[in-house]
Image (cartoon, rainbow, N blue to C red):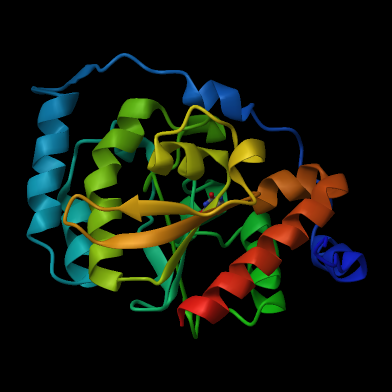
Length: 246
Ligand code: URA
């Protein structure tokens, strides 16, 4: 039996903003980048430092402070802000996106631009909001220049902090919003279109296990409203699993 698709509702969700211009293809982000030397340290050395700093964090405030001191991402120098998280620490749902855009960099919070407004509407449709029951973050904390996709080593230095945030907040379900977080968290060779619609097991290095569901990124939906039925099915799956897990 198929899942009922509430197309009028998804239409209403998409009406929050006009279609966004095309952005670089996801595939570009998934190209392996060479592990570079950055300043006095190699990327693996920066990753080790990130792991050590993240291990020392006991709260999301600690993580925010650690990230403001961490200099292992080349993106940081060109950013106004380090964008760490928004919403409710300890919430059963954690949404992890790709990384800040211009508006997020300006305001220092994730998902506050047009895609973020659509994300809020999508979450509201399944009874979720960042102020009450959802934590929102990203796999990358600094806006790449020109909104290009983050490179593999830029994601790699953030990952220990992403994992530590999961361990501290202990969500019951993670939603990876878009191909970049889905592919990088799951270390998958598949794209978002294959990954979405399924649930995966995610385990942090510290041993916290949590189900992960990939969904279409709201920015993608703004560009391709014809995929709204898929987005709605993603939301229904998330709602159903949260009902079972809570
Ligand atoms: N897109 C994302 O993936 N994350 C943000 O914080 C904003 C837009």
